[in-house]
Amino acid sequence: MRYATFIVAAFLFGSLGAQTTKSSTGTAVLDIGNSRDITHERNTEAREKLMQGATLDAVERVVAIDISVTTALHITEHRSADAGTFRDQYMNEVLQRYHVKWSRSGDYTFRRDPSDARVWVCTVTGQVEQLPSADTPVLNMDAIPMAPYILAKRGAAVYLSPGTGSAIATGQRYEVVRRSHASYRVPGEKVKGRIVVLAAEPGSQPLARIVKGRYAVHERYTLRPATFPLLRGGLRVAYFERDAWQRMEGARASRPITGFSFDYFEQSLLDGLGVTLGLDLFTDQATDSTRFQSLAVRLGGIARLPLLPEVLSLRPTASIGYAQPHQVYKLDGQILLQGQLDLCLHLGLMDLSAGVRYTHLLTDPGLNGTYAIGSLGVDLYRLIPSARERTQPALRSLIKSLGGR
Image (cartoon, rainbow, N blue to C red; front, side, top):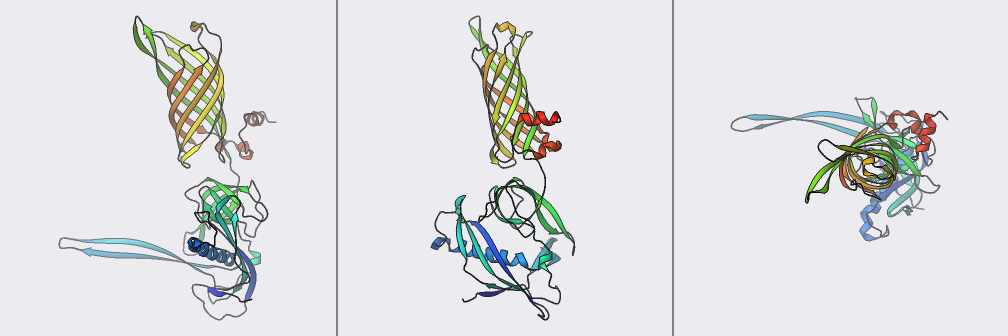
């Protein structure tokens, strides 16, 4: 078999001396943007990117990498007839030196990812020969386990490379870390996001979902195991109001109906689905000096529809409950049906929302109709250690944890 050979290096220094050769397999994942076969002429560029990515992945798995950082300050002067101006520009340059010779020992293999016809996976196997240099000694890479890292990103989904430290399993949680160079020689780490492994089947590339850091997480960032909640949960307080119309002496007059709602909610960070248990207090301003208060309790389901992920979303809610109108209406308790749609702004532990709510009682005492509503929610689950172990919303689980069972 004819071997394709090339050198992956920025510079080679000194004598070659003793050499170390290792077998390595690299993988690359890419969304090519169409459903055509990878061998189609329009996918030539995508095919080349996959081949290059797989080769680089194979090399980086087994070699010692020499990283140098160069920082420079450039000052430029611009003169005119009246005055002169100076412009400063800092430049930071990172150079990676691999010092290796790569020999491919098999063909590039391509296959579609089962979850999406547009995503292709490329795999290649070869021999990586470590070439020593005067500046960088050859390291024993068997003693340095390689951490798993982000192989490819597609929206909120990321494909993972398992590295050499440990296996990746479904349900595992990781922090995504970017390794930076805080000083000339001392590397630093910055946590850029969090992910949860959704699928890790044998023979396929592990797939995970970003639950935090949608815009900060990038390819080649490394992973480290972590624990964090997969639920948002806590309290939400809202104010709602509408103008109700009634006939008085042949004329129609409006009267305000206002109220407050108090909700306990749980919502999954993975699929956005959740539950809410709420209490509504209605105030019917019949006259300037007369107010009638009614009470309702309800149980509902909520969802999250991202508009700007992790920043702005729509939150539809559907609820069913029981309402007890004020005795002045001379009505028994009523079945309550309620629908609501909110535009939510997420601010860390809090979220602000505004929207509309439609309330319907089977026998209307004047409370039925569309209300404007604004609310403030607080995510308390980040502060409750027991919530970190739960993966699905369940009111029963919180009651058990509070009861110590």
